[in-house]
Image 1 (cartoon, helix red, strand yellow):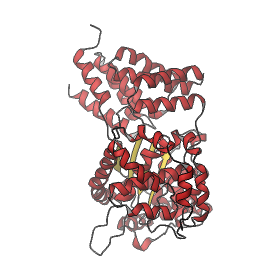
Image 2 (image 1 turned 30 degrees about the horizontal axis):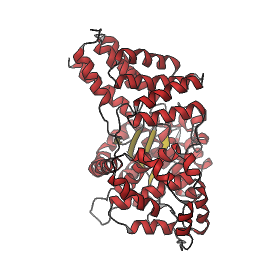
Image 3 (image 1 turned 120 degrees about the vertical axis):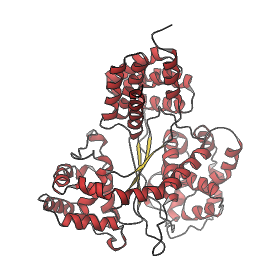
Image 4 (image 1 turned 180 degrees about the vertical axis):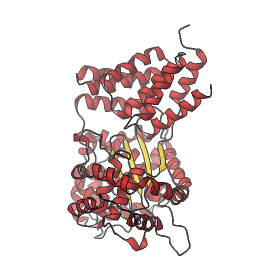
Length: 493
């Protein structure tokens, strides 16, 4: 018998295999709260009369305080004024999602990974650090919690039900070792009826503003449709990116968009995004039991929605998950047949009454070892571990770049973990750590090395590693949650 205690091994294997909800958290962000408090104080007045009462309260409280840095923030906002209120808000939402926590608000991602609309705002970080202290935002954040919690409670059940509904339909199994993360933030300091999304690295974030009540005295209706729509993007957009080569062969169909005056420009410019939106609209028509949505989407310019609407009943009758069914489904698109369908369509000249939420464009195609690693992750998520192992090993032969090698060793370590082989997993995790992992992956490695250490009887070392995972800047919320739960569990023994 090796040095690992059998019962501890079995418990750790159960943790590794446990499915985690792809939904990370429904929460509010102190970073975003500070950003919005600052720009409100500096003149962001969009739709102020219909905003949540918390916005007016924060503005009034800040107006009472002596804030030497406010003038510099006002000048900053003036210099970065955009052409309309939506664009004005959007850049600060992007900054609030990218910047680190108070009190420093530092942007710790590499320069090449900073979103384009955040790059011009980097000087805001030191200004916010001063503003946070001088305006005592920590106090306002605490006083805002009752209003924020009320909104979180309003959204909790509808959002969780929507996520479960989509997971069931797509047959999605979000394994606890996955490093992708879906987060919903409530922001009550922005103009009402806004929903925006951001996809940066492994983090997919939905930012929901306050809703305007439908009648005086009534609670606002949660924007459940929009959150569900964003979650479908979170699940399905990576598939379009992964199977870009197949979809690029269907791109000629996009020529018909020249007649679709009402479709947003983002879908004209990005065929992969258009395909994802068409599939999402078809899925929504099935979930809502409303086939009329398909015809409406077609006339708005979402040209492949009818095709997907015809294919989804076939998908529902078989057993594969959407992630595995997808390449065959998009590969079967017949250009001639779809050209005939679209030839005589009279597209609407007006956009939909329900505006599409802002979504990020697909990333550039991967090549070389990065593409091999992406293929390996797809096999891993489909529980095809032999194929995943083969691709991770192939990636090691394709590159001498340490970050890519680190991801390959990390993948091999996860497979060993899931196969109840901790003695193999431990040195592989350590090798990936030594080569320099990105924070999202590094946090998981520290977590599992910590659990392995505890299982081996090295309690103090295990606690130290798990604590490092919990405190690591850039760690995903899910990794931090698991680390916190592990520390609580260990402390009880």
